Each structure stands twice: as C-alpha cells, then as structure tokens.
Image 1 (cartoon, helix red, strand yellow):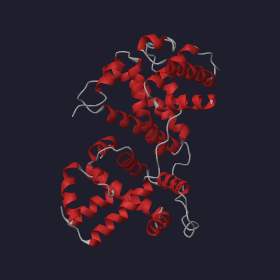
Image 2: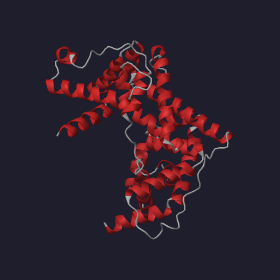
Image 3: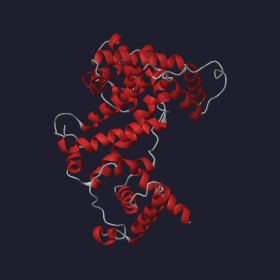
Amino acid sequence: MRDPDEDLVSRVGAGDSRAAAELVRRHLPRMVGLARRMLGDASEAEDVAQEVFLRVWRHAAAWKPGQAKFETWMHRVAMNLCLDRLRRNVRNGGEVTPEMPDTRASATRALDDRQRRDRVRDALQALPERQRAALVLCYYQDRTNIEAADIIGVSVDALESLLSRARRSLKTALSAERADLLSGLETG
Amino acid sequence: MNEARFMELLGAYGADLARWPEDERTHAEVFLDGASHRVKDVWESERSFDHLLALEKDVPPSISLETAILGSSNIRRHVRRPLDLFGRFNLPRWATGGALAASLALGLAVGYAAEPDPSLEQDYATLLTVSGGGAGSMFLSAMNDAER
C-alpha cells in the first residue's frame, strides 16, 4: 500500500511551503496528542512536537519512499523524544510517575465526563512508561500492533503483554468510574 | 480462534476488533458471532471500558505552535501577500478579506519580541487558512464572530 504522505514529503523536500503547511495540518494534532499523553504536560508536549517537525524539515529531502511509512517514522521520533525526556526527568530527580488516583472518595458520587476524562489522564500518567507507550500507540494513535511494536522496539507478543498489563492497571485505577459509567448506561 | 485466544486478545486490544491483529480479525468476528453469553458479557464490559478510555481526546494545537513549526521550516516562501491571492488563485473577495484580517490579527497576536519579519507571520497565517488547517479556520471564525 502506498504511503499517503509520500508526495507531500517529496514536495517538502523540494521546498514547497504549502506542502509543509499540509504536513503540519495532517500530523501535528497526533504528535501533540502522543507527547501530551506520554509526558502529561502540554508545554513539554509542544516542545516535542516542534522537535519532531524540525527533524521532518531536516530529513524530508533525503526521504526514500518505500522504506517505511512516513507517519510511522514520525511516531518513532516522537516516542523516542518522549522517552528521553521521561528518563532525563528521573535522572534529575523529577517526579515521573504520579500516584495512582484515589478511587475511594468518588465511589458514591456521579461523575461528569470532564471529571472522568481527568481521571483517565491521571491514570494514564501513573502507568509505567512502556505500558503507557503501548497503550497510547494502539488506542490513541491508531497504530497497528506491528507498527506499535516496531516503534517501541519489542516483539508483538511483548506488546500484547504490555497492553494487557496496562489495561488491568487502568481498570483497577478507574474502577469507580467504570461502575459509574455502567450504572449510567443501565439507567439510560 | 478459540476462547482462550479470544480472551487474550480482548484483554490486550479491547473490544474494537479494528485494533486487533489483522490476521486474526476475521476469525475473531466469526468467533464472537457464535460465542456464549458469558463471552459476550465480557466483550460488552471491555467495550464500556473502551468508551471510558475514549473520553481522553486530542486537543487542537494552538495557532502559535503551528506558526512556530512552519517558521522553523526555513522553506522559501511561495505564497504571495494576501491581496495577491485574489488574482493568483481566483478566490472570492470575501476569502481574501478574511485571510487578510486573519493575517493581520495573527501578526498582532504573535507579538514582536525579537522583531521578526511581520510579512513572514502573515504568509504562514495565510498558508494555514488556504490549506484548510484547523487553526487557520478557527481563527477566521473568531474574526468573523468579532465583526458581528
């Protein structure tokens, strides 16, 4: 299957500014989304997104069609930048893994979508980084299992193990929200 | 596809079979169609959990981020000044006026701390608008709302 970005990248490499704008329009939301979910910080996510596109501008002219999907390459660059930042934060003594959200207080009160969304975000941030990476790539970035495994640098079996563990951890962290959502569905 | 493998994949990828490995998807669909109520209940439970995870949505990037990224491209500008678009691309006059308004407003919004070339910012705003970019479209809408 032909890479849908092949022509655009070629035009960017030739200096076409409209192609550059189209490439940004097409991929920037996904890059920011990936970085935000991995890093938990909107400002750091924007820094990563900018760095990804700096590398796009640098490499577009040398991009060889057929070697890999361009979007997969962008995801690999973005993920590596995120993992580097997370490890740098650990070395510098920064907090990388927030505590698992406390589910006790919310067990009996109804939650609106915004609160549930915030708790999903918190629970994602509490996952170990490789489980978070697997989940973000497969659930939110719509990467296939083969692409996601390649981006993280693991086998497909290992990816599935990461995904299973991530989902189990999230179900535990979000048990109150699950119950609330299920009861909301039952009462219509 | 047997129940053990179905449950394994369900636990990893969730209920949306579109996420499942391509070579197992069709077998999974057939299995699910003929599955027991117990298996289908588990599948429904995973589906509701997927809905919870889906509450975490992408947020549109800011105009300033898009502009900064395009500014870092150092690509020679091929876009003429906004008024030239009317003749060059046969745009209706209202689009040209909107593009000019958006460009000028973006120039004010971005600021000139380092005295960048303002025409460069206007060109990028125009690029974002002409290309149909989300930030450019949102900006035009905001400008139109402000004029009402």
